[in-house]
Amino acid sequence: MTKPKPTAAASTATALHPANRLGLDYTAEAAKFAVPAAGIIDVHTHINGPASAEIYRRAAELYGVRLVYSMTYLEQVEQVREVLGSAVRFIAVPNFTGEDRRHHHGPGFIERIEKFHALGARIVKFWAAPRGIDYGREVGDPNLLRLDAPDRLEAMRVAHDLGMIFMVHVADPDTWFAAKYADASLYGTKAQQYEPLEELLDRFTQPWIAAHMGGWPEDLDFLAGLLQRHDNLYLDTSAAKWMLRELSRHTREDLAAFLGRFNGRILFGSDILTSDEHLARGETQREVLARAGSPEEAFDLYASRYWALRSLFETDYHGPSPIADPDLAMTQPDRYSEMDAPVLAGKALADDLLRSLYHDAAHELLEPLHR
Image (tube, rainbow, N blue to C red; front, side):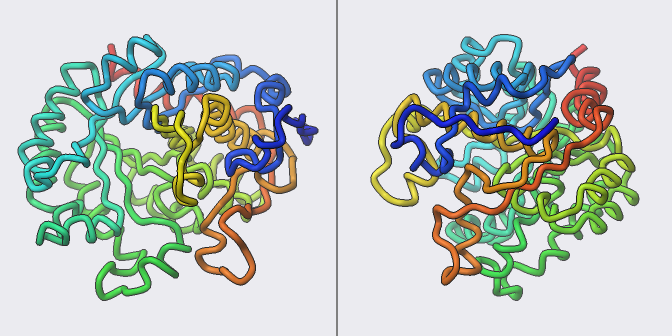
C-alpha cells in the first residue's frame, strides 16, 4: 500500500488532541486501507464502559477488526459483551483497584480466574512490570507482583489446570529503564526481568503470549533468542506508542525477516483502553494526554491506534505519528515536549506476513481454546 494522504478533520480542536496531532479524519482514513479478507484479530485491549465500548466498536469495525480479546473488569464483562457480542472474548485479570492488595493478588485473583473462566475466558494475564515493585512496596511486599512469587505460582497452577494459556507483561521501554528505573539495585536491569520468565516458560509448557513484543521491541536479536529457546512463546504488538517509536527504527528488511522467521508466533495487539471517563474532559496535563474529553475525542483516541499500527505494517508512509509520545521528553526534555511524536516509518509488509500477523497466528493459537 502506498503512502496515504491524510484527510484533515473538520475541527481544529481535534487536531490539538494528543491522539490526533495531525488533524486526521480517522473515518475517512479508514476507507483508504484494504479490507483484510479474514478480518483482524486484536489480542490485547482493555475495553471498559458501555458508552465508550460503543464508540470503540465503530472504530474497530471501520479498521477491519472483527474479534478482540479484552482485559475487561470482571464486573463489566456482561455490559461489554452486551455491546460487542461475539466480537469480544475476555482475558482474566486481578482486581488492581481493590484496597486489600494481598488478597486481590492472592486468593482473590484465583477466585476471579475461576469466574472469568466460567464466563468464557481462556487467557489469564500476569502483569510483572518493574513498577510493580513500587505497587508492592506500598503494602510492605516489593515482591508481591514478581512473576515467580508464591501466590502467582498458585494462580498459574489453577489457570493451567483449567486449560488456560498465559499472557505476560515483562519489562518496559528502554526509555523507562533510562529514567524511571535508573536504580538497578531496586528494579534490576532490563535483562534481569526475563530470568523468572524463562524459568516459568519451561515449567508451564502451555502457550504464553508476551505482550508488547515481549517487552523489548528495541532489540529484535534478543527477541529472536527468546523465541528460539522457548517454542511455547508468542508475542503481541500491543502498546501502540511504544511499537510505533521502536519498530519504526528498524529497517523494513530486518522487521520483515524477523516476522518471517517467526511467522505464526507474532500476534496483532493494540492495547487500546476504553473507559467512560474518556467522555469527560480531563483537568490535568496528564489526564489530557491519557484520555479524551468528548465522544469525538474518544473515537479519535481508539481509531488512532488502528490507523497508526496499520500504517506502520501496511504502508510506506514516512512522516510524523499523529499520536503524542511523552517518552521522547522523558529522556530528552530539552528537545521534546510531551506533545511531540516520533517519525512513523511504514514497513509495507508482504501480504502473507500481514495475514499471519493480523489473523492467522491468533486464529490458529486461540480458536481451539473456544471449541
